Amino acid sequence: MKEEIMEHIASQRSFFKSHQTKDIPFRIEQLNLLKKAILAREKVITEALWQDLHKSYEEAYLTEISLVIQEIDYHIKNLKKWAEPKRVNTPIYLWPSHSKLKAEPLGLALIISPWNYPFQLTMSPLVGAISAGCAVVLKPSPDAPKTAAIMAELIANTFAANYISLFEGGIEVNQMLLQQRFDIIFFTGSTQVGKIVSKAAAEFLTPVVLELGGKSPCIVDKDANIALAAKRIIWGKTLNAGQTCIAPDYVYVHHSVKEALIAEIKSALQIMFGSDIKNSAYYPRIIHPKAFNRLHQLMQNGDIRMGGETSESEKFISPTLLDNIKTSDAIMQEEIFGPLLPLLTFEHMHEPIDHINTGEKPLALYYFGSNQTAEEILHKTSSGGACINDTIMHVSNHHLPFGGVGFSGQGSYHGKQSFETFSHFKAIVYTPTFIDLPFKYAPFSYFKFIKKLI
Image (cartoon, rainbow, N blue to C red):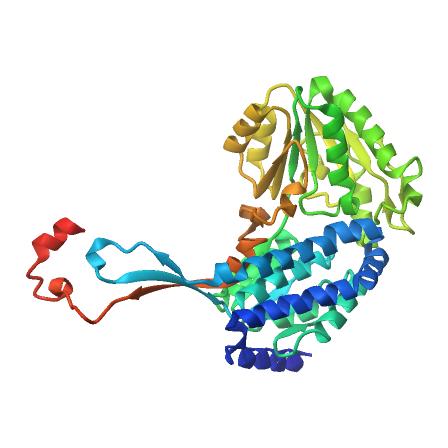
C-alpha cells in the first residue's frame, strides 16, 4: 500500500506540474463534472448515509448533498472573479511601478475527513481545492464505510487518477499518507488527532487547516423566546444524533426560565419525532459501539429530566436532558458528540461568560436573548463562529468563513474562503524600463529627500 501511495503522489505531482489545473476553464469543467456525478448518485449516497448513520433521506440531503451542490454552484459562479489578479495600491516612492496579487494553487492537497458528515466534509473542501487549481488526495473515515465506498467509486469514475485520488482504509493508511509530502493538509476531526496531523505536517513545513470541535456553549437568557429557543436548540442537538462538531454541547439557562425551557424542549421533541423516537425514520444512530459506550457512561452524570433510553444492539440513545450538572462533572470535561444535553443555571451573565473563558475556545457559541446582551457576550468571549437566537445555521452561509480558533481549529473554508485556503497569493511588483530613478542606488545622493518621502 505504501508503494501504491507513493506512486500515486508522484503521478499527481507530475500532473500538477503540467499546469493544466491552473486553467480556469479546466477548473470549472471539473466542478461541473463533480456536480453531475453527485446528482447522478443522489439515491445511493443517501442510502449509504442511512446504512452508516441511520440518516433519513431528508436529513442526508439537507446536511450533506445540498450543501455541497450549493458550494459547487457558488464557486462556478464566482471563480473567474476570484482568480483574476488584483491590483493593489503602490506607495509613491515605488513610482512608476504598480503592484498586483495573483492567486496560484498551492499544489498537491491532502484532505482527511471524518465519519459524522462523511460526504459533505469530504466533498466540500474538495470543491475548494478544485476551485483553487490543486491536485487532491482524499482520505475518508473508515467508520462510515458505505459512504466511503460510494465516494471512492464516484472519484474513480469522474476524475483522472493522477488528478484526484481517494484512499480507503484505517489509521495505518492515514499514517502512510502523513509520511508523504503535501503542499497543504486539510483535516477535519478531533483535537487529539489534529495534533498528530500538525506534527506530521511540521516535518515538511506543510501548511495545515484544522477543523476540530470543542464544547460549544448555548446560553438562554431570561428574556429569550423560550419556545423558539427550545425548538432551535433541540433541533441542533438531535441533528445527526448530536454527532455534529457545532452541536450545542451544553446549555447555560437563566434559573428563572429553566423549567419552562425543559417543558418546551419536551414539546418540540414530540412534534419533531413523535412519541416513539426509537422507531422514528428521522432520528439517526450512534456511529459505533465504542462511541455508544462512552456516551452511556457520560449519562451517569446529573439527573435525567428527559430521555435516557438506550439500546446497545441498535446503537440508539434518545435525546437526553441532564439536570443538576456541576462544571467538574466528566460530561463537562470533553466534547459530548452525542444526544446528551447538560443543563446549568446562572443568575448573572458573567457566570456563563467566565465559564466559557476558563476553557478552550469553542468552535461555535449560541445565545438566545436580546441583541444588546448578545453583543456583550460576543465581545467578551472567543469562538470560531456564533449564532444569535439560533443554532448551527451559520455553517450554511457560503458568504461566511467556517473554522475554529485555538483548540477548536485553525484556518477556515466555505465559499470564497475555500478558494483562498487552497491558494497562495503571490505579491508582484511590475516596474517599467522607460525610466530608472536613482534613489535606491549607492551612494544615496538623494537620501535626505527619500527619508522625508518614506
